[in-house]
Image (cartoon, rainbow, N blue to C red; front, side, top):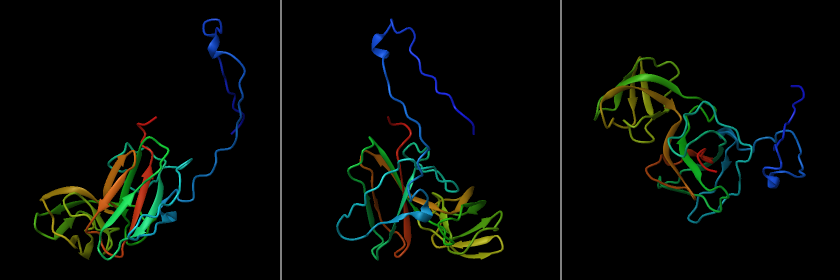
Length: 220
């Protein structure tokens, strides 16, 4: 709070006369973020056999907390959110068009079953390749149906039962090991580029996926 003073200079002007002259300056309050600044207010997208683009922008968007950062696109905040319901085929194509930024990052995530506002629960987990059971160091905060975020299991893997510190999962592990694994939100795919797009398959039919869009920090 309190007054701020703005200092402008180019001294001496005789060295570079092109850097001196009259100017206009204004100051105003920071505008509010867009309505879909967080996943709980994600804009729903139509899913059909043809593309129907939804106009939007990320001007004055803030960073999303409580969800792991995307693994692509030099994420530094400023993301907006969209959602879509997975069709019966389990396949989904997500495309962007007519963007004004020179690059765009996009990630598709599955939310925890308890809702879009739920943060991740991380716990050390021991798993074995070919087995759908695992042992967790602490089961507190885990729920049946929660998605597991780990490269050791296929995308969309969920917890089907919890007995003490033993959990049963909907898919077998593809490798063996012990690691700190996040249960809750899971990133299915991530991509960045001039017109980022994603082709997804084997998603849970009827599930809601959340699409996170941002401008990479390494552009401009």
